Amino acid sequence: MGKKVKKKQRIRKRAGKKKKRKKKPYVVSKFYKIENGKLVRLRKFCPVCGPGVFLAEHSDRWACGRCGYTEWKTVKATAVT
Image 1 (cartoon, rainbow, N blue to C red):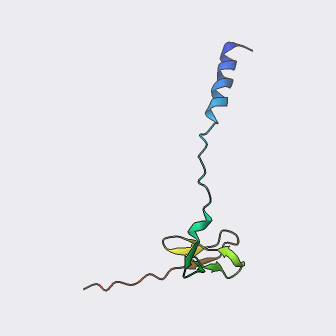
Image 2 (cartoon, rainbow, N blue to C red):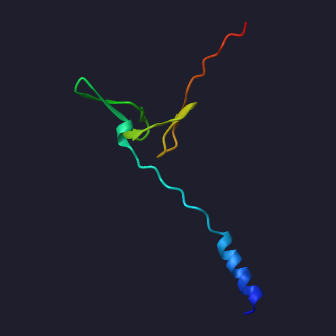
Image 3 (cartoon, rainbow, N blue to C red):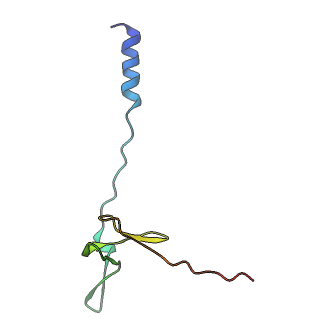
């Protein structure tokens, strides 16, 4: 192989590589709180999957990452005067 072909192969190899993103550790303590010696769950359970699977809270909805169930938050209508 000639120099041009080898150079093209090096460039092609390098172009496809992306930077790896560091993953954040999964923190379970965000989902629970202890009040008066009792455990309180801070998030809703998925009605389809059952207890043990929490719904993820977004700005406009709650969503289950396991089955795809979505509950929309109600938007309060503001009166225009």
